Length: 155
Image (cartoon, rainbow, N blue to C red):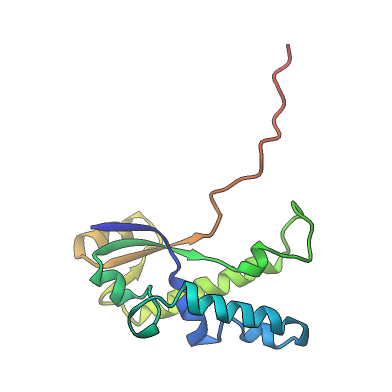
């Protein structure tokens, strides 16, 4: 069994549900970002057969993946050009990650015979025993931390 530690499963759901750029098109000044997201998705995510998404339940199972960390990722939140480096995150970022999380939950509910979102260890064990694909939500870059600002111990 293969464990995929970095799978961009949510990326193929956004065009189907509301488009990765649909919310951006609502604001005139965001049209350029919308075009960038569409272009990057075309070349960086749609690598499967027939110019279709390369990360789907069917393809993960066909490739022998039993567990996949489903990376939630909002590129324009990670690289927010309107903020200086090291600025605190905008509260809206978290809501966009929750939207992606919900899109994955909704999609996987349609594949219940083949895949499940594992929310805890018991669900993961159940998937492993049944041979069902287990998706585990993760946040892109969520394991990184700010540079240490600890002080040297007093002498």
